[in-house]
Image (cartoon, rainbow, N blue to C red; front, side, top):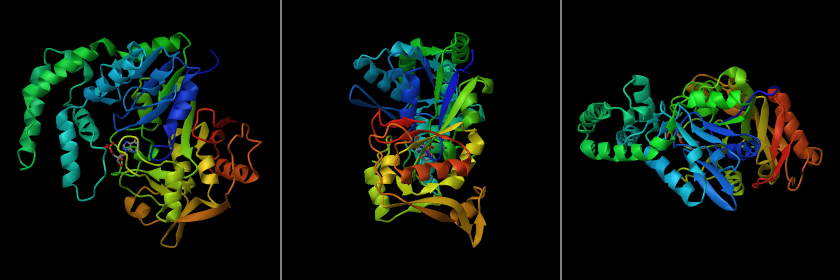
Length: 424
Ligand code: IMP
């Protein structure tokens, strides 16, 4: 086999960069799709036969007709209620859901995780702005080694373990007047019923994946969230509780580094963020409103309007260092081209000192001002099918990005549809 089997798609910033479109394209020539990290805090939108599907847990690759397996890997945290709803929706629309495989090692989100996520967010003085899906508490229990994995739902010890955990959580909830206790019997019955529904999909996914690799099948790992939401490499504490960067993706799927072909860094021609946290290039004026409307920048999972800012190349360089991007996918070139002028951040001003590398300390990041270069916009890339056909202004913008981070731009998004892409 010449080509290594696995392509990986990773968000270069804070998510919502348009990973779905690249995944969809790669899936046309791949057999297996894998989700490796995060949970239903992610929202991936795909359009199939004119119908829009927003999937939060099931790999979007399942919607590709030629797929052989859509795997929810060991690194994912699974809310069975959400998963069953997605399965039902896809079944009703005629998709073959039997291709779905869930790792028995994936961790389970329970109602006490969701209640705790909300309570912790309420009690925090500096809000994180979580999606309130129980993600943080579920990963906390995983790291504490006091959690229930998918496989445990079928163990004779399940009820005892659940009873113990529910009791522990209730002792905390009882400290707060407005918190309701978790009803152990209700949760136990609900989860036993859901476990029975899901059992047909549960398996040991690492061996399964490696059997596909042995058979020369191509694999796409669908990254969730993004680099600067990474618990280690993101803007801690304004991050999610998993590692969406390359290391977490490999651990969360059980695929080794020497099986990787391409690592695509997905980015837009500007930046967006949902939730709290630093955003050096953030803009608040009418240009931000214009970009938000032009780019339809509203959250898939929560519907929240996204914060908007200029393209930050200091962050992109950091992101590329951490993930080892082999190619950049630059989305929304059409959107930014509609502005008269566009700006790009090439360094930070920290109290008069120029910083060229993304700082580690939150106190420094919070006080950085962007050093911006202006490019003239006002170009139209719609209908361009090759890089050569692009207007000079667009070419200059792309070349500048490539030279700055020393990674080639390999795909360019020129519009919202599947066909609106230039592969260079
Ligand atoms: P959590 O993942 O729900 O704990 O939220 C932690 C932070 O990550 C919040 O700022 C969320 O808005 C953000 N976040 C989580 N998932 C996504 C995503 O898929 N896209 C963008 N932001 C996300």
